[in-house]
Length: 155
Image 1: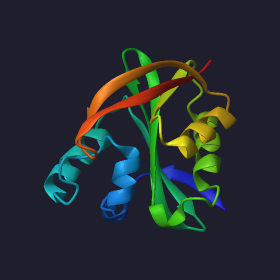
Image 2 (image 1 turned 180 degrees about the horizontal axis):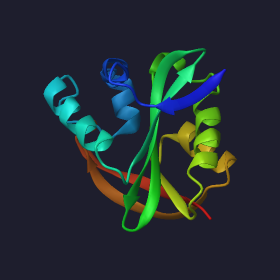
Image 3 (image 1 turned 135 degrees about the vertical axis):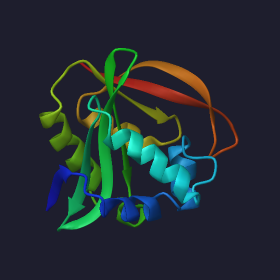
Image 4 (image 1 turned 30 degrees about the horizontal axis):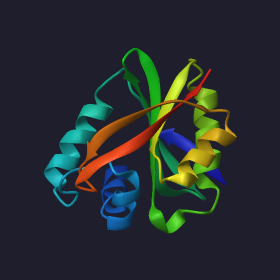
C-alpha cells in the first residue's frame, strides 16, 4: 500500500541514505556535488521544509519510508520532483505516488523534468498525462557534464 504523508524529521535519515546510491544519483543527474555531505543535505532540506510555497510529502510503502515527492514554483509554474530508494525501483511505487500527489496538488499546468535517458521516469509522467513541451540543457553534478532534460507538462 502506497501512502503520502507530511515529512517528519526522522524521514530525513532515510532520504539521506537513499540519495547516497551512485547509480541513483547518475539517473537523477541533478544531485548534490558531494551526496555524502550531510550538512549540505540538511541545509537543502531545511530550505524545502521551511518554504510554505513548497508542498512536500514522504512516500510510504507498507508503512516504510521509501522516498519523497514535492512541488515547487519554477518560473511561476509548479513543478514536481521525486526520489525513490533505488532498492524499490520497478515496484510501481513511483507511479502510485505521482498519481496520489497529483490529486493533492491540483494546480495546472504542472511540470516535471527528466534527463532524456531516464526513460522510466518519463514513462511514469506520460502515464499520468504529462506531455513533452520542451527541452533544456544544464550541467548535472552527478554526471559532471551538461545533460539534456525533457520538460513535461500536465495541463
